[in-house]
Image (cartoon, rainbow, N blue to C red):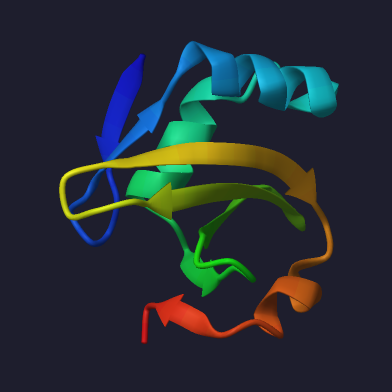
Amino acid sequence: MDVIKSKNDVPIRLPEERWFHITEEHSEMAGYYFEVLESVAQPEAIYEGRAGECLAVREVEKDKYIVVIYKEVSNEDGFIISAFLTKRKRQLERRRRLWPR
């Protein structure tokens, strides 16, 4: 299990079970393990989810973005929920931007 720090300096875990879920639901994500971690540590932007989760966004190819959904449970713990690829950045931009402000 890998752990990286979010922009709020919260350790974010990527348990094997979550990675399995991500690659089962979104098979195109199989080769993007390190990009998922990088997207949380060094996102281009972070948006607010509907249930208190964060959506970290980072461009991986021209006009292709990785979106990583994660939850900061406390100042000492958080975990990645899911991740997917999208070309629809404008839909994300409708959400409240948490970072950078």
